[in-house]
Image 1: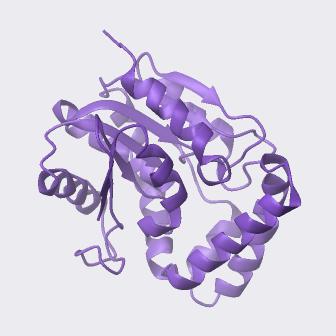
Image 2: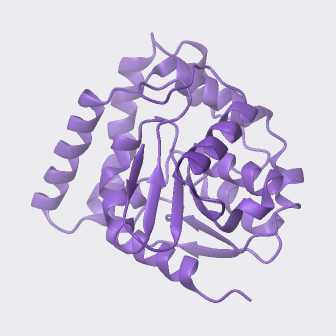
Length: 257
């Protein structure tokens, strides 16, 4: 578990790959603004929970992490897959969520594309194609979000190192995609009472989750606010972590009364 910084607690729910170490650059930036708590998702090494898992397992894990950290209520920031978990948690446990931040998450009614469905059907056999496709998907975003070749190379090297040192488990990722397709997120959104911020990158740069899918949260959650981060896509929390951390900090610390 990652637990650093001081101030208002922000609990980060990790994206599809599951390991908190992948988002370390973002976590360090967020910890400049508050107490940041996060963890690896069910089934991942060090998570303390077996996988595959259902939505109730992910909700219970988030609740247990908060209890272990001695946090009764906190801002919850869910990234991609984690955004769906965070939304369901906010609907089920409103007293424990002070603010909700949903980032580039598959929204209500989302379904995997044909290419994504092929990966999910044979996750281990599809791993080489998935890795190659990931490079193709993220390259335009890196070119847009980072201004120099030195910064772009540094980002690519750090990402590659993280992927090798903290490898994702394809079968767990596939299970999370199947879980997303079966969630009734529309009904949950209507029950969310926490002030909510929905964040995406630009439509042409997010090649993982359509921006219009994530924007469904802003349409369905009462009084939700929507922000688009320019020059980024699905990886905006990592390509521009300081910018994203400042955005979250401003929202979490604002007066929403």
